Every structure is written in structure tokens, then in C-alpha cells.
Image 1 (cartoon, rainbow, N blue to C red):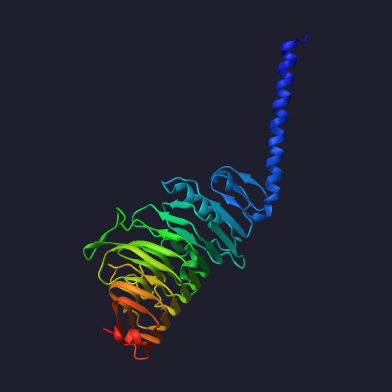
Image 2 (image 1 turned 180 degrees about the horizontal axis):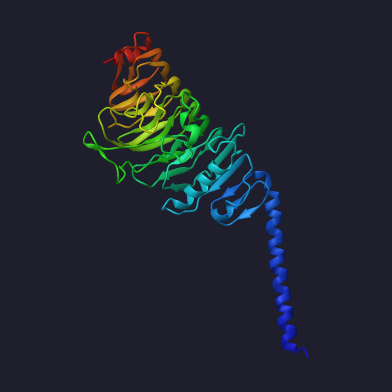
Length: 364
């Protein structure tokens, strides 16, 4: 015989189940309405098709097949959670032919304006990726580490088999980084070895053997014994309206932006194969260099045997320690229209380098 208490309990259970079903239905409806937004949340990840995951572990089982993702911050200041979410989107959204290559697929990863993200490892950039950080801050919390590196570097887990032999400008292409503030600790890693009285440093953005890079409207803060941006054996790069500030500690020969060669491991430790590929066709325009204790603003590495072709530094402002612009072995290029608050302009073995009036006035 069913008692009154049992009937009441059953009725309450039915009401509770109905409420849960109603809430779940509303969530799915909202997910469907937002499906076109291609959103991805840290620890609450949603694909363009509305599928939900509440952890990066669950997300790994999902088919991340959209072309645009927004990653929301976790608030985890250890850097582990945000790094996992960003790496998941940037690494898994590929057409798997070769793991490092998006083939013809282009993806966009967005940060949320006004938010701060924390990472504890360097993010790999795969081909055909646009990273938009406008209005957001991305902090590297680990000492001795940068923010971005193209996926095919010497010790990368992607650099295996026949891929290791790829050289020239073919180890990465079509990178766009637009907007955002990128902050590193400005301190060496605990396992770094000594070099000229300093420990080995890092480059905040590092590209090697790459083609078609565009960096625009970003702010890069702090560096230790390296460069804010390093281009080693890269072609067709545009760096526009960027600001460089904060502290620098390190060797007296380093630059905020270095144009380098992949001649050997001394020039580019992670730039294998060391085939002598040089950096060419580079425009640095309307940038602000306010790293007052960094030796150089923009410079080319004098170790290159082939020299550098079509390097232009224009309409930028410099306040650095020694050289605003240092051009070694530059063919077709120069520095014009710049404002130099502090620093000299140096040209070595660059007889055809074009200098403007201000640059000639500050010539070393």
C-alpha cells in the first residue's frame, strides 16, 4: 500500500527531475543560439556546434573543427589552466596531414578584451593562425620563457622525422598577431647556463625559417638577455604600431627587435637546420621603443654571410641605450622618418642603406 508520505516524496522527485530537464533544455537552447559565435571557454569550452565540455580533458575528446574561437580566462595565476586551453585550441584545430600544419585551413583565436591570462609555457604557433589579443593582457609567469614560438623549432615535439630537414622559409607561414599586451618576468630560467656573465635569455616572440608574419598593435613588456621579437631566417614580415617597454637586463649587444640568420647554433640555437637562411623583406613601421636600458632598438646580426635584403625601419620612435638602429650588411633598405630621443644610427657594410635627415643627424 502506498502511503501519503511516499506519494509526496514521489511528487517532489518528479518536480525536481522536471526542473533539471527544463534547465538543461534552456542551456541547450542558449548553446544553439550561440553556435555561430564559435566560442571556446577555459574549463567551459563550447564549439561552434554547441557541444559543451567542462574541462580541457573533456575538450580533448571533442572535434574542434571551427575556424574561430574565443578563449575565456580561468583566473588561475599558476599559468597551467590558460596555457592548456590556448594550446588545446591552437594545437588541435588542424587538418591532420602533418601535425604542425593547418594546410589550407585558417583559424582565429581571440582573447577577451579587458581580461588577463596567465601561461607557464611558451605557446606554439601553427600555420595560418590569427591570434587577436586586442584589449587583453597575456602574462608569462615562468622565468626564462617567451610567449610565442613557431611550432617547428629544434627541440619541438613536432620536429620529427623528415620534417627536421625542412629549411629555407618553409618551417612556418601566415602568422598574424594583432593587439594585446604581452608581459614576461624579465628574469632567467632557473636551469639556464651562464653566458658572458649573464644567463641564457629568451625572445618573447620567436620565429625561425618562417614566411609571411604580421605583428600589429601589440605591446611587449620586459625581457631578459634576449629580444622582444626575433626573426631568424624569415621573409616578408611586417611589424606595425607596436610598443616595446619595461625592463631589460642582459648582454650589451642585444636588440629589442633582432633580424637574424640561421647560419649556426650560435646565431640561432633552436633554428635548425642551420642552412644560412637570412632574414629579408622586413618592414618595421610606426613602432615605439621605450626600453631605455636595452642596447639597441632594431638591429641585424653581423654573423650573416649573405647579408640582409630590403630592411626598412620607418616612422618609429626610439629611446634606447646606445643604437636606435644598427644595420649590418643590409642591401636595399634603411631608416627614414624616425624620431630618435636617445640612440645613434649605425650602418656597417651597408653602402646602399637609405637614411633620412634625422637618421643622418644621429649617425654614429
